[in-house]
Length: 494
Image (cartoon, rainbow, N blue to C red; front, side, top):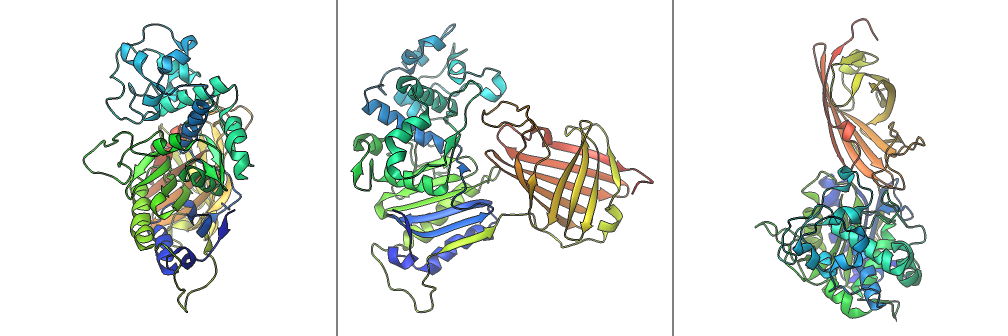
């Protein structure tokens, strides 16, 4: 049973934990949660509002590690053999010529991502059946087992395999075998692909505590609360360095090897890793687990930074036993709350009164904007009003802090990834505004729903002209919010 304790109880000083926590604030990383746990003692738990410990969060490719556990369970149940070629499990998905290399590719090759190579992106292929797509048009391919390359499509296929041999959804199978014994995942779910199977390489939605508990089960190699739920041998292999995953000469924090859908780290660690830096890093030698969630899509620096701070500040300074508490230390568990990251700049600009209510007309552009204007409530907030593809849209904001609302775009995916909705579904958002210079503005949009994404809109003004630059980071949406628009002030309007 998880409980919150002071850091000294698990062998580290509170000042080191504070240093670790505030290093992310210093670097302005877009965190949503952060947990540090030794054994079942949580010695740091922090959330960035509106996220709380009860908020289910999209875990993206962390889901792959759940698939690996399900594969191990299915093998234990005698339902599959990881040394058997994957193609033998899906004869109904094969059409046309299949290369000899793919005929030899085993389930184990797919677990280790030493496959013949990823297939065409399913978002662009127009084929809703991702397993069918995986075997399609493979006349030539590399020999499996020779090269490590990240293969998300392969992870989806082995998820489909689990569902085929068990006759159950991935979530239901894991719930019956594992989750129910952990007293966790009660409000969790998994999204689906367009043909109705589980989106197994990306779409687990659960709380950070759920992930921490599952990571504890894995790091215990199949036991929880003294009860064995799964065979130890598979999990030890799955979390070990089965293959080298070096893809450059730089040895990043996550290039210490790869197991069965688990990443290896320094200090004999392994990790669940998801896009946007959903992480569970497990360090068995010190019985230490870190879980974090956030939306750092587009930040290539963040993942290694988080892991390095964990190793350098927490791991290196942690003792094996409890230590004395300093007399000037707050002797309460570290349970923290912060505001969600927002754009920051000058509090106001003399240009605001000149810009307020003025329409700028755009020439044809990739954003599909016809015009835009700003309406300010006062110096603390307002809204961007723009016409996009013939429809008026509004984006309310606060200056230098977030305004929570609904992003004004319909049609993005809901339960089924990659499938446009037709019921008016929209995503929740957080929108902040900043004066970067007197006549330069940033609006930062964070999508905070079952799907995460971020969008930076930059506006620059000179004379009667304006330039809008839009930069998006999101998986298969916000494509129509990427590019540049040039606009001119409409005289006489205000």
